[in-house]
Length: 583
Image (tube, rainbow, N blue to C red; front, side):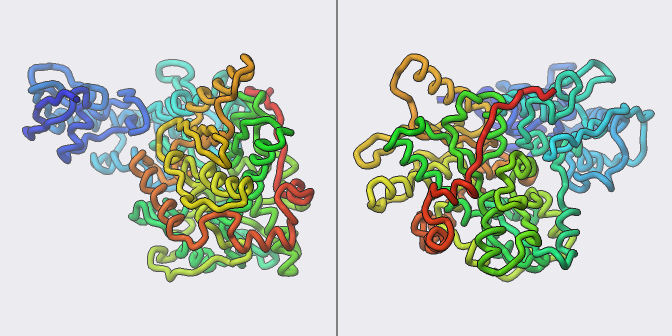
């Protein structure tokens, strides 16, 4: 049982668990202490100096984010001296920051901008010094602008500690300090896997998603283009945050929105997630039964995880599912199956994917298999944040739009398809169908609660046809090493493998916590977004991918069967070892 302590903050009595920081304790009694470097996902670094407070009996100003509250401590958070010091810190930050807010991707959504407005800073108090450093756009997913960096360190901590990628670090010292890959190389030449967690955690416009909105607007205005769109599972549960709603599913309003924007057809990535399950579950069963390819099977829906695996864990390539990610599958189906059914020239189809992920922008060009129809599977990718900007640009009263339905041929989905957006969702969806493929019988209970939740690594087992299937689910790339090392150790020692099936998602929480999602994500928000998807699953009349009538029609009319020659050509890909540092 935790030891409780009692103290006061601005004269208000607080009772909290021992070890609680002053910042956390203040929030519990509705006292806001400003911060720039602090983030709920990260250990406190105390680098920005904005959160200073006073403690009675001490002549020091302490940093609230990393100072534990102590018994009988008397804390002051907002006297005139503290306010003046915070203002001075902000003015010093501004002296190294460009004054181009109106042109910045984070305008009106910037933590620095908000604090400067709160403190009423209207003029420059210190001479401006901005280093001449190049903007890095090399990854085709995120852009790094060092001029806008305030050296809070969030991106470095996310990249190194949370994701274990180590693409970003602090270089040089003193006034020359800046964020960059080691050796001052470009991000595309570094270990970067384009997950975008750096951009999702950056408080300013120093790291942002590479913007495709102009490309999409141009296509929508081109009468020679047949513009179609798809929406990923996680986006429907997070787009509302841009308009003041959390944990609400906006699927049907998004369908209406896309038609307002001018798209000729509105599809749903959830449909393609059902296709993914047909292929991936069949692949799992084939490996499990025939042994032609090795166990464990590792899922491949996440492009950052694929990039990470190819760079850091290429010895596991034989265990990777060859199935493309759902949005790539829907892209190729739109330019083959849909084009044939509708009599449309596939060269005119312009497919836009609305994704929670920045890595999807890179994925669409990662290999020749992403052009399986003879055309790019996907023509443009918009992150959730970009879509929110487009909605506002279009002047659409989004939250009050009438509900509409997707275009059924590539739009109807099962409950299994929608839970792809949460960690454990791919595993759960695959197990629902794999059970049927093995036994020929439907599950009485399709909910696999033990694969859900935000624990970094979840290990469990289920029984299918009397056989125990051992599972592992990891989310956040920093958690992957533990799982893969257990597999390697078993292989090296000729022991029984610890898992039959492994799901990995690069971003904490899975796609609901994707690098292209609305800013200031917390575990509380991740849970709300995931719960919106699980509620959609529960409310679907069809909850298993193989029961989706439109999936059955697709295979009957076009693909023949899972893992058929046609499926392999259109829906599957290959992998190769990639250098960690590209030369």
